[in-house]
Length: 405
Image (cartoon, rainbow, N blue to C red; front, side, top):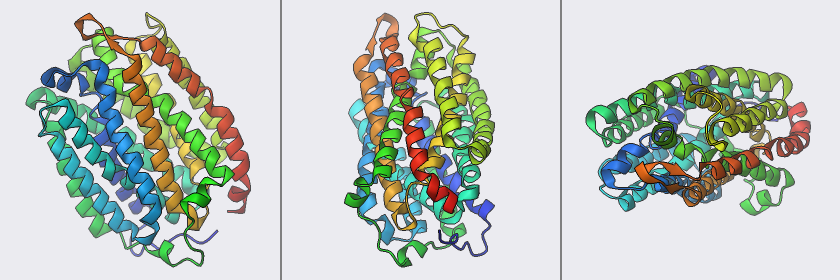
């Protein structure tokens, strides 16, 4: 395993912070749309059962961008790709605040996703280039803490901005934030071209797809993302419209969910470094299946809304950190950017399939309530239970590479 890429005057911790900030803007851009769904559905006359199409448009576009990116990302300075992708995402997000129809919003999300996909894969490539495997779980947990930060700070703020200034306001706010972070990343990050000068040529997409480890990684990612994203775009609508959770308390719910996830991702990262991805990922998958069954599969939830929501955040944190850390061990150094671009494409494609499936399985009842949530929950549980055996097989295949590192 080659040594970590040089950082110049930037410390490893500072680099993780910058990458985390980029991920924060990226994740917030995606996350804020889902809890805002009932707001803009009402203003634009969109059926609540069709909100999955809006989330799916972003992820499907990001999947296409990931596949395209896997062919050329190794040829460019990682800093340049990261900054340009973030600026493109900013433009798509700003456009989302200007539209007046379902079709216009879908187009804006397609544009944002096309740039958001490469931003994610490039950020993960930088972490994999710079941080040694022995500390990678901790670093991945810190970067994925951007999800928690987006929940703690961004989503509640976006919900409050929408409540005070209309649903368009959060789109403009996130676009401005993304632009500022892109400029900061350009000046703070060093050029990152080491991957362009390695002895081995970058691995082709065809070669990657013929690798058994890559195939297992793709299957694992597909199950993980589809299981989560058949539920995620519809949670805010279901809580408000079916379970009568007050709109004014939704931001507080995301705030506490994000705080819990913030600490859970860090603990999960350290735990993965100690006992491995399979054990941590299995615990997360089991907890997620239990929470979905107790909150959404049954007609009357077995737990309070707060417990269901927070349990979902907690289980997702453990499951996702374990899976993402395992994925960084799959490619060799010359395969890294191409593999992570392919993974980004698979992630987003699976998420879009889950979101589109939710729009097919759900239907609108009188009072805009959602019907069919029990079927959607059953699908999510079934997919979630496939995750542990897939992770076990993948961990067995990458373990020699981890030991060698």
